[in-house]
Image (cartoon, rainbow over all chains, first blue to last red; front, side, top):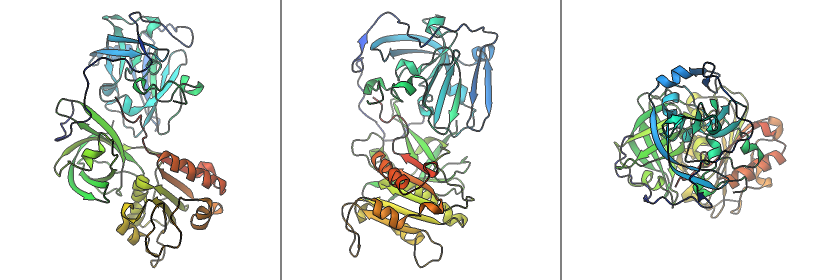
Length: 199
Length: 246
């Protein structure tokens, strides 16, 4: 937790678990992908961060598992309309992965095995909002749900939580990813129902 | 990721709705004018909110100034322009951004165009030019509602004093109420004003345009129509990240 800002209270918080507008509750875990499920050998798996200056930092699977992990319980909201509440994941926080990276970048382009990309502001990856997740409900993450590891950014629509994640490029200028280039909203906040370009 | 903690050492009201916070950031690495910081505020129950603010000051040791405009329904700006007191620690990330920046060594002319509090990062550029005695010729066109809402009015007057040889030329478009003696009637920036007071395209200036989204779109279109190469027009719109969260 951060340093308390004396006198700051922020917006009123509501404790209820209402769904974002236009979403319905599901207890399944539907699978939606833009292409075939890639199979990745853990001996060859790596996660790489490239900065705007061209600096590179790479983690092997062993490196990743050696980092402090977090268990988080979060709600998932898919742009196709379903929401799944109270899902539990284990992973490494992006705060941990990016802690020592020297960068002035405001934007990140996320890359996946298989060629998928998605973009989001760096601010949305920090402060306990994003993880590289490798366990779901206590089990290794299935390939169809993004295993061995996927990005988890649950406050945005689920297409931002790139499956089969393999790295980030930190950018000074925003660059649209795969869905963002073909009509999906650049930011994708489910609470503001930012599904498509015109919203 | 450039995380630091600054302390508010002074506050300065710039207008009825805008306040400058002077921060001391002990490990500040210096910045380029045009860069911004993300301030993170945390309530007693752990809830936190992060917002981006342009840096207003020229790079100067550990001193960093940001100017915050009150957003009436905002979550963070009422606190930063109201309750915050000297001595308050603030978590921040920065300096951030690398496109909307001016490097004092760049020789080409610079055209600044700011709407409302879009003047803030442009002020950092003017202050840096003055501080470094950079030779690049500057012109500034800004848009303000009325004389009471123009940020940094007194300092702007000094930095753009027409009696000093190479000072930047300042033009203000008053959108509601113009001061006494102003020839141009109140109104928005238009093509005629752009052609009259900004650098002609054949001088190949770098243009920095900052303000609300609608203002930036309009000005960028006017500059392109006036013959400026789009590649030399750099823009910054308010709300660089996702904006308000639930």
